[in-house]
Image (tube, rainbow, N blue to C red; front, side, top):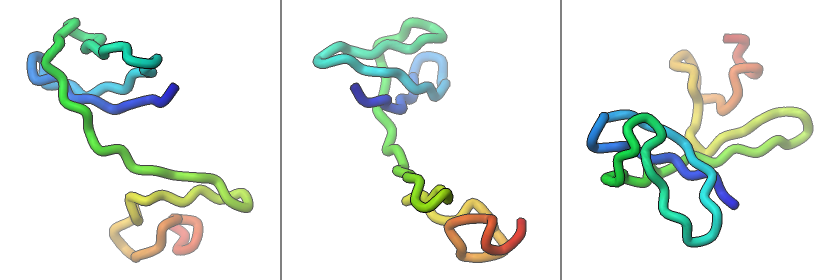
Length: 71
């Protein structure tokens, strides 16, 4: 039962929804059916630290975790 990220073209909002089996998702804001599944990033916890496939969220360095640069 994965959680997917979507974008609604009707109301222009992004949202996440838990999808069961072959269930179809709809926008929780406007109940719109014209939605696009977004590419999600992956993260995992290893030895107490989170890492992400998205890369660094810090613009001052290239580290994948801000704990390494102090920001």
